[in-house]
Structure formats: structure tokens, C-alpha cells
Length: 101
Image (cartoon, rainbow, N blue to C red; front, side):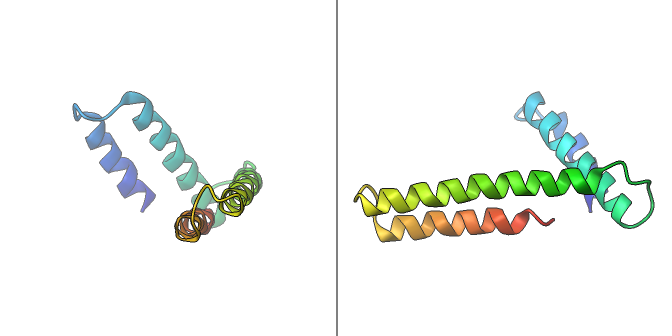
């Protein structure tokens, strides 16, 4: 799956509408994911990918929790409605669920 994404990214990199910095960022993300999954499958030697991945997930979860606290405060002070808070919470939930990929 990651190899397919990287192959498609190579194709898209030649398109006029893509940005080099975005392509580089996505390439790094998918290369890292490929190495991590390969290590999990026992195909490559573990070079700390899993440990770094867990630390990254922990950091992002901390940021998600900070955002959750902020939207609750915004709702409590009347800056946003319950509906807006719930929509944002759903986005944060989805972001959190993607961390394990």
C-alpha cells in the first residue's frame, strides 16, 4: 500500500499543481511508514522506527487533547455552539484514530 502511494506521488510530483515542499513532506511520511511496517513484518532490522512512531503518536495525542480543551472552553464561554464543538471533536477523533496506521 505504501509502495503504491509512493509510486503515485512520483507521478503527481510532475504535475504543475503540486508543490515541491508538499511532495517532499508526503514522501518522507510514506517512506517512514514503509520502513516502519517493513520492520514490524520482520523484513528489515529495527532502527528505532517503532519507538519513534510511538513517541510521535504520543506527541500528537497531547496536541489533540490540548485542542479538545480549547474547544470546550470556547463552547463554555459561548464563542462556539455545541454543534460546532461536536463537529470539531469528530475531526479530532478521526485524526486520533489515524495515528495507529
